[in-house]
Amino acid sequence: MTHAQLPGDLATLTASQALALFRRKALSPVELTEDCLARIERHQPRLNAFAHVAGEQALEAARASESRWLAGTPCGPLDGIPTTIKDLTQTRGMPTRLGSSTSDTDGPWDTDAPVSRHLRNAGAVFIGKTTSPEFGWKGVTDNPLHGITRNPWDSRLTPGGSSGGAAVAAALNLGLLHQGSDAGGSIRIPCSFTGTFGIKPTFGWVPQWPASVMSTLSHLGPMTRSAEDSALMLSVMAQPDPRDGYLGNPARCDWLSPPPANLKGWRIAYSADLGYVKVAPDIAERVEQAVGLLRELGATVERLDPGFDDPRRTFDTLWYAGASQLLERLNERQQRQLDPGLLAIARRGRDIPLCDYLAACRERERLTAHMAEFHQRYDLLVTPTLPIAPFEAGRNAPAENDDDSWVGWTPFSYPFNLTQQPAASMPCGLDAHGLPVGLHLVGPKFQDIKVIHAARLLEPHLPRLAPPGLATG
Image (cartoon, rainbow, N blue to C red):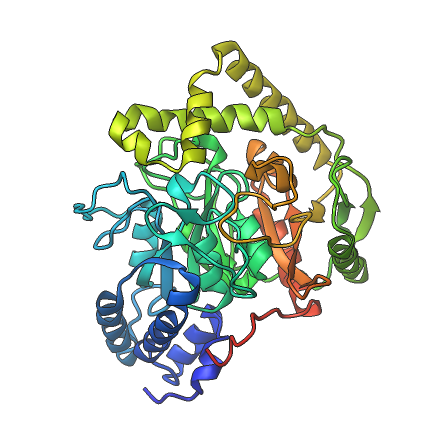
């Protein structure tokens, strides 16, 4: 294949563009993989986005892909696309350490989780495992095993979490497709902090095995530099797997269907603060500007709150109860190795009375029913993704916060894990300090395509964000 682009161009290439170049034999999967690996080597020491880099394996897979493209017989819709997997997701041939020194150092690493299997069968080239906090327990990315992951916009700051490594890799195109997971905001938080796109699909679309300790709060989804690439990734990820113990919607979704010409006929609710959140003024301004673009695209936008109180107590009860399951898996020596914050909430979860847990389940049911009724009237709910800018790396919360819990500074994300709705974060500009701002799009359950279509229509009208030095590596 003839390399028709400069390396700097490859740093901003999307998966959809790369596939088109493969078809024309204008770019080789080997060249693209080599470029990604070279830039990983350059950025990894400063940003720590990867728990494991599979260089030789990736090049071997890329060479096999190149042969298939030359023969005109690609094996699937992602053949040759450099892809990363989060360290929480089992992947054959690569360690899954869960960000924890309690994990087995020797494997065996001989099993693909459903997502890894589907992506591999589609031809994705796995280039590595991205970092996560220990067992994905918080909204920033650091752990006792791999250290601190940092934001490519400013390495003094956090990229968010728990899919922080995936977000850094997406922002710098260290791979073109990235798998994340989200049980309280862990796709959307880092996408907002790094200026990338990510969607938490409706629970049940993407199979999970082994099941998360957070059970039905946890969703797997894509993180990319464009909404189109996330739709492409979902077209592969959102397939059933018999190992998943929960049944989602048995219907198929046409993830790659083109969006409508405009948003005429759509009714969108815009809530600047959900009725109870304090949002930084510069972030609120950027979000307001993006909402104006939805109106220009033809939508009827009504400013109103969705009408529920902060469900944090409900979320905390379920989150802590989930974390407590870790104590059953780990002996006393291993428990002492845990991130102290994780150990603290696991112990709190162990002491939650059954009546309190069941009350939280009932509150969750009521909130889910409330939002289902809300979406009888509105196609989407739009909010900021986060009310604050990225803060110092290595902390669980901003230094000025009285509340050291990560949940306290991400009030827009976790309500929609309780309701299991599709929710995406897309970049909508920069704040007063030149850092990314996220726009949060929330849709009705199993109407994920509405979220993706709105994002694809809106995306060309918003600034394309790129961390300093992206094109030059």
